[in-house]
Length: 290
Image 1 (cartoon, rainbow, N blue to C red):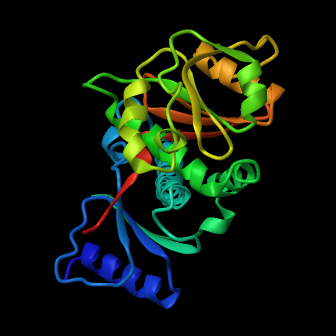
Image 2: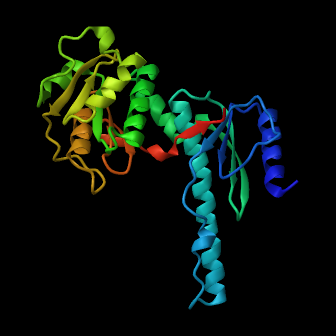
Image 3: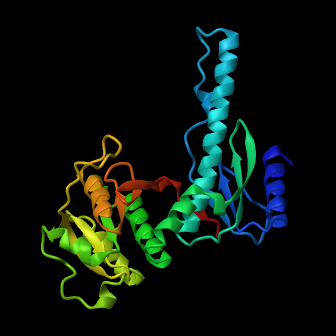
């Protein structure tokens, strides 16, 4: 029995003992011959181990040892955050229950078992703040579509867009159509974001210029809409374009929540009260073990 196998079996026993809602795995790990009733999710693999990037030439041993220690510490923290964030994203999207999750991170250099209470996760807490304005099922639907747009795009091309959710009347007053509204005249059931049969058309219209306007009841009022907002006082990270700035500004002027998808990089951001409340890498989604 090798070290990885011992780590995995120990993590599963621990998860069962604490009644974890899920096990999140990061790394190339096999579960042959290992069974458990706890759902197992496989997180995407992050960047290569820091040990592979060490350069010793021209550095004295004492300095090299200090840099090695600092880099190991940063790598460990990053790995733990990756497991925690992956679990939080799946909980936000309704894929796993809240509670304790157990993470397993294995590389060729090290192994770690992480115990994380999702109720203390900052992403989960931020999501709960959003759900005070927009019902949880609607937020989950919007985020799920945003993740699909960020990771797969449309017809092989990366797509960026924004979803403005809630305070529909005020948002409509502060915006106008830049193309014909593809949802005009359609029945509510054909505009309901909770109806998964509508998701493909939403992702198709995500290629259009402009943003989606969605009511607090989850009804899509419009796509291809331009936000008429004064964004001169909005302060965001450098490199974010007009879509992000206007999305932030509309949440300052209304009680709506904005979810943006970056055309490059697959980054999803949530804005509320004129500020960025959450930034998520779409690559941090996990795959559940069959």
